[in-house]
Image (cartoon, rainbow, N blue to C red; front, side, top):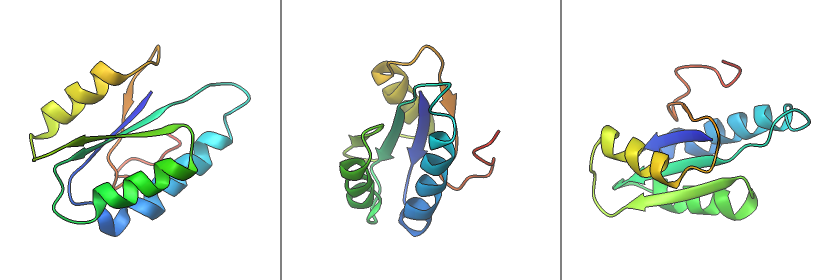
Amino acid sequence: SIVLPAYNEAGVLLENVGLLLDHLRTLERRYRFEVLLVNDGSKDDTGRLADALAARHDILRVLHHPVNLGLGRAFQTAFDASRGEYVVTLDVDLSYSPDH
């Protein structure tokens, strides 16, 4: 499971999640993935854009907090919903490259 907490990330969401999904496709023969994006009460278009991405990509699920509950709570929401044997967290701004 790849966990992506997101708060007001509309400016980078489409491109960066797209880069992550492209990278995961290169690993499909070896691994099965799910990507959990937690929209933590964003006030911009993060939630709407994330839902649009999820409609096009089966491995992406979006979880919404109605208000900002903070990074720790976003992680907890994703961990609770995770179905993977392993959980990896990444920032939507890709401060770490997807190949890490």
